[in-house]
Image 1 (spheres, one colour):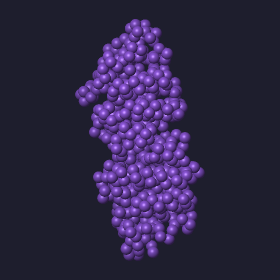
Image 2 (spheres, one colour; image 1 turned 180 degrees about the vertical axis):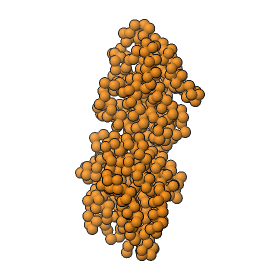
Image 3 (cartoon, chains in turn blue, green; image 1 turned 45 degrees about the vertical axis):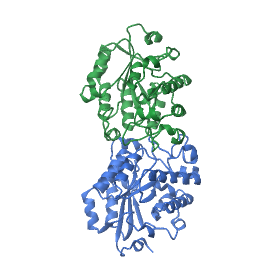
Image 4 (cartoon, helix red, strand yellow; image 1 turned 90 degrees about the horizontal axis):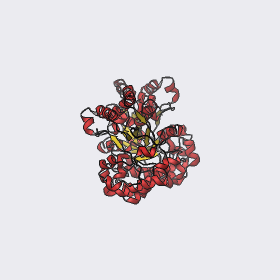
Length: 288
Length: 288
């Protein structure tokens, strides 16, 4: 049974979530995310609990519980000069951190070093911290899809979804992106997002990111679709964070913000009869 | 024996340290501090180890060991939406944190809640973290002079100075600012900064901060003087951090940066025969 069917929509419906990842990362990311939710067509976002600006976005989420907000479970910190680590003391999850107590930069380092038990403890602690703040998360996904670093982490992720009764992002393209075989790692009972889209370097580098997003909207297929974006402002703070990292860097994030808050894009959605859906208004009982 | 005498300078010498507090607080603070050290007349700075941008400024300090860099020992976080807490797990120093695990906003809350033993553990952990990063601190002082919240904290601060062989900022005006009686809390053997200057709201609110700084330079008295400033750029990040907190806010910090990087101010120093000194080039053995 496909997602549309499970959700009770007729065949042919083009359902879409436009999801802002990385809220909490910085003030720039928070401000742009909030503006894109309020003025643009972004309709869901994920919060990084271990990040320095978590508190600011948590206040927003608490005061705007009607807007879909997920937990963007975080096990990596890809930046050069801006560092964060687990919400648990490094001494409790030593396999997740470098010698300075920060998360590893890459999924590969994470995969090489992280013990399954530490991953479980830390991800659970992130969820608990969000709940303690009074957040009412609508879903969970994962920063850099690092929960896909290996099948055991993915199992933890799925288990936590069940434990907290929260939908988790399971999708073929995301698994392929991180090198997991979807045929081996998607279980029959999983609720699966049909198509997930996320920008790639080759588009950004060739000034084709807008075209990529336009193409997605113009050619969206029937089913449950998800576009993952990273809106932020290309300002000093964001430039400092993403220094030497043009991939998902500051300029890229500004483009994401601009595209998904433009009137032209809003019209494109209408012209293409795209229908918004949120995690919240998916019937939860159908998801597990 | 006064400071000049101890340092071997003739009577009449006007010695000055211009010290940038709060490095590590933000990218804005770091960038402005670095520029003020490199292009301006700021000649010393203090690093906040528990802050999100510690890593960036620690790299700078490690690569620029010739520039005076101190540890700006931190026990409070005065900001509304931007939060940080101890470098130790909150569970190890529970008396230092609010229910969310962050530092209290004020010295008063700190004083009311903090156990002496937790203060000792946390301050020592901040020093140890700086040393583990390969920093070679030249001195220590304290954010919001919170080590002056009570005499027992001040004793810890002094003890840590002795333990790590680092000069600590001891000064009558700072004690008065935080409500400690200098006559009771300065020991005979302490090395004391004769005069410490720090901006006040009444100057900033009446657009007189520049005048205040100019007056200091024009009327500097003989002895060892210290001006504490907080250079940062009045940009989105800094506005976000200092929201609803004009006191030492984003605009104030931009003024600090502008004044202490201007050619006019540099000339004023020359005209008034002011001589720079750093913590590093004070003879350490005379300080304790």
